[in-house]
Length: 220
Image (cartoon, rainbow, N blue to C red; front, top):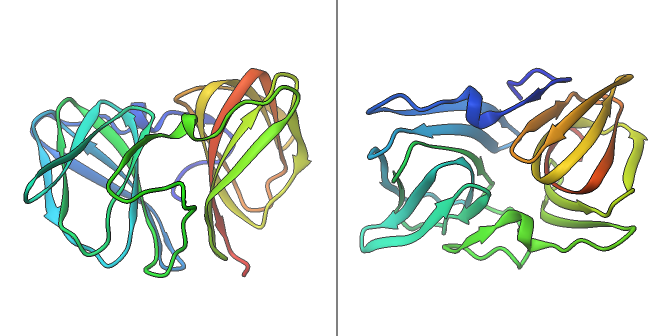
């Protein structure tokens, strides 16, 4: 992934829209998956096009209308996701300046049944907090890509470990301390963090905390 590991950053702040323009930045294109950032200035749009695979849009700033040739399918706002249906023309129109991440899946990718194509969902609301526990939900679990959401009860955390692939964290609610290669970083809702392959990391909730994790695996 084309991000520097070991720092807290904001996808929204680092991909500001340009008036009158739509901007895309490819972050990863490996193993048949694609991850890209899109910046849409207010009033601009990406025309409706159909694909034989599903895309997940995760909105970081502003709001967009997802539409097909018949009209608007849903308004997607900060912190929400939209799952594009396969083989149907879908476009995006920015009602305000907007920034989002698009995760393009493979044709045969299996998603959690909680995800419904053509619907708008608030990512942090898909799983609850439980006192003293970490709750985990795999939204996508393929051999080379995992997209996971997690909730951390107060006082909980993940001890130091490493994964055989790069990972991108999306902080969804609350705050946490990320340990990475011997240093600590404070992350808040709306911010991001990247782990390199085999980078040693930990997560400790400050109060309660929710995050999404996009993991690109090299091993099957």
